[in-house]
Image (cartoon, rainbow, N blue to C red; front, top):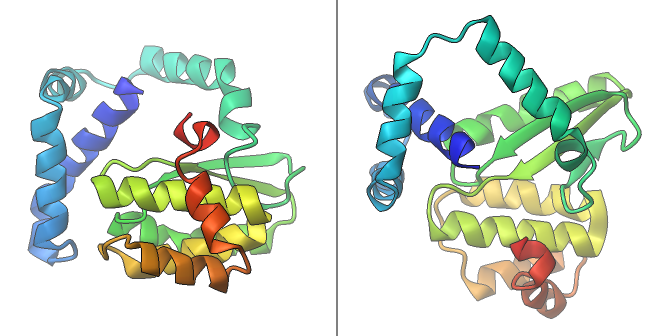
Length: 198
């Protein structure tokens, strides 16, 4: 997990100049990224190591071995939402944060991928790295998936991406659960359950 967090921080750090030039990310979102880095100072050492190393055949082999060793957890975890064909043999995993504008931009492309090929199994890995609202959104989305499956998750996913940086208030989440055809109270209670935390 630390390696993944380091990768995310590195990506955000490298994107910073071009993103700021394009004004595609809000000041609040940048504050969240900076806050994450400030709260996790050990990331800086990892970033330096990652920037110093060249990705060559050894690193590719190491990454492939990691994926092979963790395939079941990545693609078969019952708590990870699945879009497309649950039995598909073309496996795609996407790590996402509802407050990430780049994640939001990839959503239509991933939908096209799923719609264009019935063999695609798209596994969503909630990866809330942009602060407390990201964590609340991810917990709510997983609880909605647990309660209502892929259809409920798709409804919730679309609304949470549209909400972007909006505060995850109880009222908003209750309305969203109702829109997804779920019992708001049970979904909100499930957010703090051990399965979601795990």
